[in-house]
Length: 224
Image: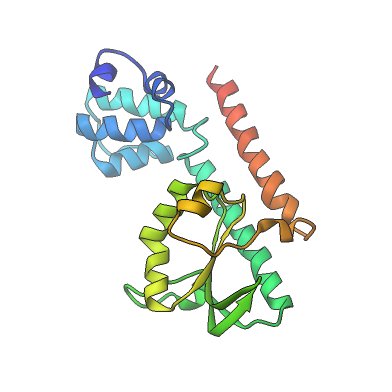
């Protein structure tokens, strides 16, 4: 990819050809051409570089400033929307648990110890939730639970929760694929449909994601 870029193909063309995030593509090429990580971070954030960069890095900065407008996966504005979706999901789940009279600690309450696994919700003693016995923790993800997401989340997070606390539940707000349920390393999921008529559901499933799409379309128009 760096070779194609050096021969004049823009980052956004390479990204479309690879069907991948343009900022992620730019990050890979930047590492190959010697752009320091801190400088690339400044390019993405639109911050001014303190020194005059070489010609190829000036070109990369110019291209990054354009693709950041419409990258709905890795741009600062899209990541903030994803975080907002995640916060909305956690709020819905917290309200639901409180209505059931369940006491829990949140990830924020649990922060503080280095290396301590911190699920979104941790109960003081095992609970029966949504028909599942001995639930001690719940993790909320504003994702669709396909096989790859489930496997990655289990490897990097859930396996640590299981080792530290025991059995838990996963909440994938956009549902879980059949393959994920059948072949994935996790078995216990909360069905998001039970939240369908609750306050905040439309914000989580429609309003916030539509803002992401509107922002992407606006960026494309500005670029043209």
